[in-house]
Length: 404
Image (tube, rainbow, N blue to C red; front, side, top):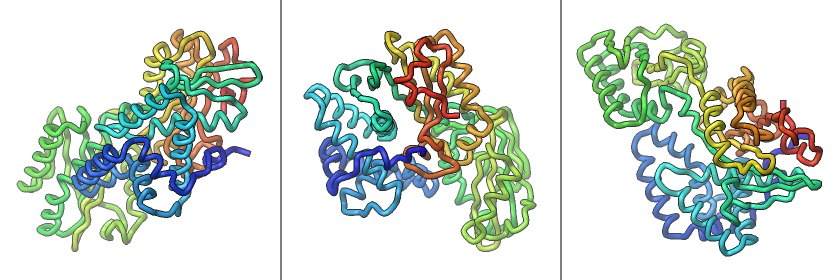
């Protein structure tokens, strides 16, 4: 029977979140929470995206303030924190100092706790499979994070995280900020022009989170609406305003939850969509790049770049990847279309993968147990390198056998 996350994590203790925060330091934690609260006020959609991205930190902060573990995800976050707390207690003074440094780095700038939680989740998962697990990255400063041993066989594990944004020309974070900027202009338009509209944006040069690019595109959209033009184009963007021809689109999104499904069927899985509603109308924004997303390709390129740097080459190596900033629809598509498998196996055919015995991939769906059928049943997708000399070593089988 496949393991689910809470079955292999240490059970959280009543004061887990508070102890975890003490490891970080009360002052750095308070500073980080204040920073996130301020950034969450940047706009409705941007704030929602930030809350999702920093779910681990915000969940632990609520738990430290007395919130109940009233959801499966909250219980798993607490279990991961307990893994960190329990591991810290077993580490040497050098390892403890290294862990505290990693924790504080994860709570600064654009970083999140997710990659560090991925490391401790990976350690717990391998322990549940019968491996002895040592945190050599913390204890000894090795480039790999873990050394696992079972039945006389051992392997190194390097944990890494990559954002799906690296495979997209139109970044979802930038899209959220753009929609927040444009929303007041769309409300003004709907007040003066009741009805149903769609503004289609094709962005050959993509969309990034740089303020100048967002401001420029926002300015073009505003000027287009103010002048009541129906089209605007140059080499950076093609904008077209049309009537929205979708049954039921006149209803607000909260009253008509099927509207997003209809829009998705109309504009495709890779379209970036947003709905603004007014008293007498609906305005849809639909944007896409001029080429398909290449998330799996970006993962393969990341594997190629880190393999020679993170693994010693003296033992079988496992690259354990956390794929961030993806959603259920995209993650399921990457699996069902075998894009992840195809790119991982292409990497395993490269000379640079000579020391890699397996590649694993997981998203937050697997980490937080969001549930089948969207999450991989074994908690990760796993691809074995059949050409590695240790590929058939029985002791390593639970960690390296392909999950498909």
